[in-house]
Length: 299
Ligand SMILES: [Zn+2]
Image (cartoon, rainbow, N blue to C red; front, side, top):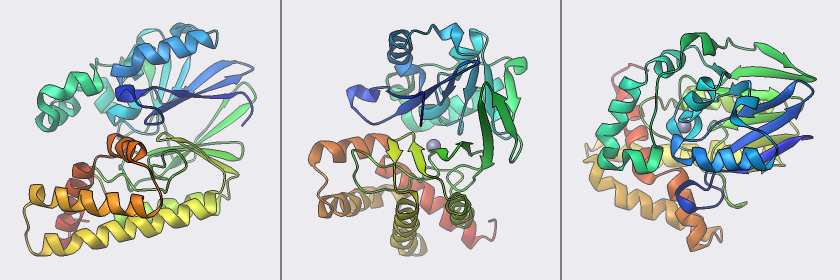
């Protein structure tokens, strides 16, 4: 895409784990995704190198509110930017305590190292975005596609013939295979398949993944994603049915997914980045929760 800069946030000192996207328009620059607050200085210095101050960014489009995508949005709001987000995600950015505290239960003392910090965003800076809503900024038409499955509050942003897919089109590091990030609590296979079908039906020329970068063959990529999503969910199901303790599954699942990557010639250091971008324990927790809710008829 013209005038696009893919900014590598060097999350945990690694390359190609988390991206932020800057697009220059005739009405000034826009940002898609901010990454976590822990990489804010990296983002700031990248923006400076492109000739921008933080306060030059007036529009920030978020795919969803997970920290690795939206954790630094408040910094831009403080400098005056409008933050575009799914209506279900909006209250969590206005009052992030609940989001933060529930994550702290999982990450404990590691919260700050991983995610930095989070402050509330004033409601006048937050824009709840409806399905298919289009924003015109400069010459760009930026269209919101509500795309649940990974998160109930997920938006993929369509701009011209490209789609910025957040996590709904999976994670693909260093041109390796695509994998589905499956964190709790929202994983919903049926919704995710519908979202993938929507992306396919729009026949985009390219996808831009937050983890990480350009996909030039969207149809092949999305079919591969459907397959691996089914594969992981199917692998997990018998463990749920046998009431196996979640923690004890993690090493086995890690081994399973690592072998999948090795069989596709992914090297050790790239496997590590896959694990940073999409931790195995998270996918175990997310898929186990999906099967549990499904068995209870709650989804
Ligand atoms: Zn996510």
